Length: 252
Image (cartoon, rainbow, N blue to C red; front, side, top):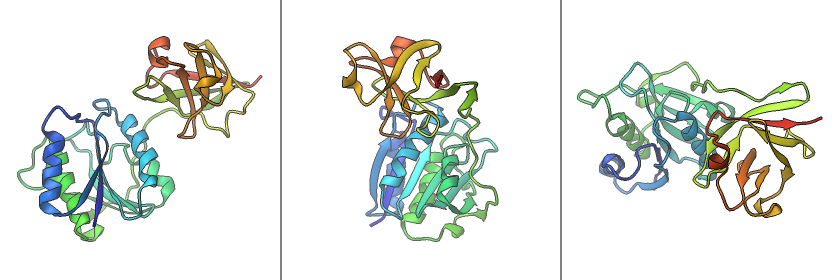
């Protein structure tokens, strides 16, 4: 039985996710559907890419991942289906799939927009039918023309050094208000002192319970990068930071 995961910024209050599921179940009867998240902030492609990157390797080979965070829907941006890491991915080529370059992309096709498709709802009319075709066992190459370009990368900053300081940024804010950064263990040793927008946080800890209630804490999170939190509180609210905010690790 084919397995399709769903990731969108549609929320659950409107009919959009329900319509996509209806199309999938109609065109690929018996398919199993798993919701990764429908709470990606509207139009925040980077947040969608982060959640997708964390989730997809946990699923069995052959899983089809339908991801729709698509502020450019209906424009010249390309809709794609691709194979990487033994999985399939369907959605807009707007940076959502850029992180798959390291997983070994083994084929990308550009999806033709069906006649009569809504210019504002490609999730239902373009991407869901393509994912359903893959779930039925149709070859990737049968879905469209070969697309010679690799998945687009997000135009985001990468960590860099300023003397004895490593400068990174917030790439995701979770529902607890924890700030997930792009600072990785190979860049930040355990003796580093962290600060966010010039506000001292302190040395790296292991978990929230290493500091008093209400205190800021920096640690390597379950996704493998440094996170900043407030024990029993919200770092995003305390610091007034969101995606793109600066986090520094002082090495000197």
